[in-house]
Length: 257
Image (tube, rainbow, N blue to C red; front, side, top):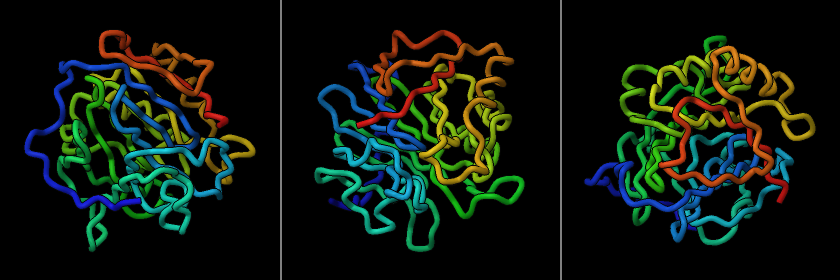
């Protein structure tokens, strides 16, 4: 396991029109995803400690992105390095003062990630501290992971996220934005084509029953006229030329191994 010493990327994010391979996106439960472009590094975002009994971890990775240091997003903060196998580079986005090291950073060959600071604290006072929003291009597709976002995006955050096409967004409320706010966030990002809900209550796997299940967000999405898809597999393959022309919500089942 390595902790990344960040180097400012001078080239910025990879252009979405660049030559690209299929990107595999695998939902590992809660806010955790594994992404991999063919022949590229395996990227895991926000692995959880074993306090959450989702069955998909441990999982091998080359790069681990951590949005913040809570038990459901950073097992390393609780001495559980074994939750991600291999010898991954761990990307911790905070400086010594606890602020997000905002900017676009080169993480690995072909992978630059923009770090954007946001509040974890919700309008009702739930959540705590700061989180990092990650925006990056992979396989010619612009992805964004919003961590435990607690408020609607500011104009500055919208600009920093860029032309997001695939959005991982929390929808469960209590400690993050809830269903209605998540819909509003999607509307703040007009280039989004695929919305993947995360951080919602799942019986037996999520220990916080004050969070809502994904159903409320899905109902509001349908009221907006967005198509709701329920893929049979936790893993989907994405290519720039096959992204939908209008917003679709994809509710992925979590991986069982």
